[in-house]
Length: 168
Image 1 (tube, rainbow, N blue to C red):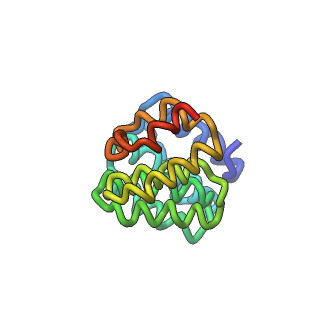
Image 2 (image 1 turned 90 degrees about the vertical axis):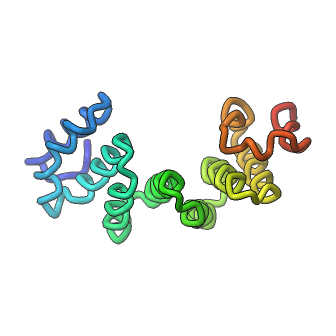
């Protein structure tokens, strides 16, 4: 159950359901009661971020992420989502900073290491990118499979150390 006042729980679940069904436009139309209620606002903002991301309205999503940060609302999700949006709006240094912040807080977060590796590869910092992807693979072996096919890592494809990640 989403953490909202009892009177808005059904609405929050409905909006969440529309998002799960891939209908972010419907979800957005139903969000206002959650956003207007102080006890439900953080859940409403998170749901709206999800809708904006699905609609590729990344700048709008970033604005809501900034509103959520002071509420200490799931910092891992915020960092990952902010980085995702920043990459897609050409703010690669900010995406990198988000992942560095997450790794500082959670050094064993394989997803953060992998994403940082992707962003660094795009930025042309191959050595550091390879280091981050290697750390992700050592923290979670599932990153040795399909995730290594991510086009963000194309700059690393010919590196012998990168090729070994699949076979080690």
